[in-house]
Image (cartoon, rainbow, N blue to C red; front, side, top):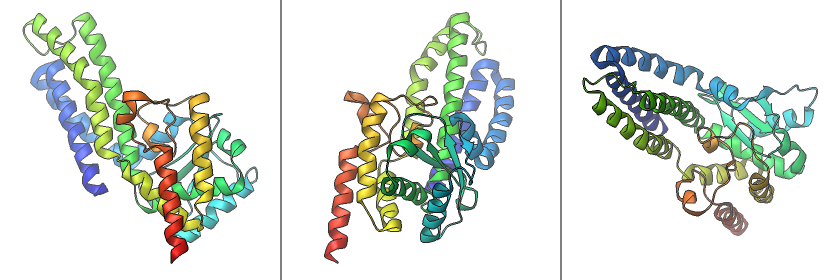
Length: 287
C-alpha cells in the first residue's frame, strides 16, 4: 500500500508541476517543468530523508555524549529485527521525535533536546520503539516524500502569489484572464497540499506504530506516559522548525491544533491512542 501511495504522490506532483509550467510559459514551460518534475521524482526517492533532516535542522548524535540513547536504540533495533538507524537530534525545547529515510537500511531516528530532558528512561524507550515501528512498517519513505513534496508545493504557492500580485502569469494571451487564473491557483493550492498529505499519511499508521512499538519493548505504559507529556508540552513550547510540511512525521503533532483544524490533523488524538494502548495491554494480559 505504501508503494502505491508513493507512486501516486510522485504522479500527482508531476501533473501539478506540468500544470504550473503551462500556466507560466505555455507549451515550452510545460516541457521544462516536465523535465524538472522527473528529476525531482528521482531526488524525492533517493534524497527525501536527507532533505527532511535539513528541513528540521537535526544533527548527528555523538555516541560518547549520549551512550544510553545509542544503547537503547541498538537494543530496540535488535528486538525489531532491523538495522540500527542513524541517530540525530534537534536543538528544540519541545519534546518530540520522528523517523525518516527511504528504507530500514537507510533509516534515521531523530529526537529533540526537549524530549531527552522531559521524559524518563521508560517513556523514552516507548517513544524510540514507536519510531522503530515506523521503520519496521516502512512508513518512513512515504512520510519523507510527503514532507518534501508539501514543502515544494508551499514554495510554488509563494511563486503563484507573487505572480498574481505583479501580473506574472504569462501563459495566457489575456492579462486579465491570467490574473484570474493566478487568483484561482492561490485559492486551491493550500487545499491541494493538505489533500496530498492526507492521502499519504493516515491516522491509522500512528495506531499501528504505537501497537508495534509496544510489542518491541513489551510495555505500553512508557509510551502512554510520554504521549501525555508531549501533548501538553506541544501546546506550550513551539518547535522552531515546525510547519505543515513536516508535522505529520513527528510522534506528537508539533503544531497547536483545536476546533475544526483537528479534523485535518494527521495524528489521532492522544486520548484515543492511550485508550488503544490500554486495550492492547488488557488483551496481552488475558492471553
